[in-house]
Image (cartoon, rainbow, N blue to C red; front, side):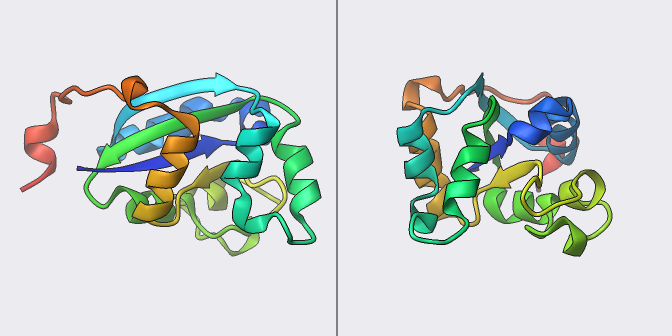
Length: 149
């Protein structure tokens, strides 16, 4: 099975949306294999968003991500990165489809509730930034036999 990284950002934590996000991903059939609530240290914020370091919006993004706790997660399932990204919706909530997390729960691109890895390669990189291999649980969901052919 594939794994992906998902983070409820400070606005989502402050709004009490962790349970909603977890519930949607669990109902889809994904398996939560790691989770932690924490205020991210500067180094990990820089590593997480390294592709944005030189962009004009990065100082604002950094300030926002460091402003409060985030809920970090690793999810497992078939095509995890691609399917979770579809569930999350477009970066700009105004363009996110109804039924997606951002389409239903976010109002502003700068406070869009959630981050999800955009590819399996990004997922591997982001998981390694935030979790050690020992922190990733291995177990079977009781419904795994009926989730996949």
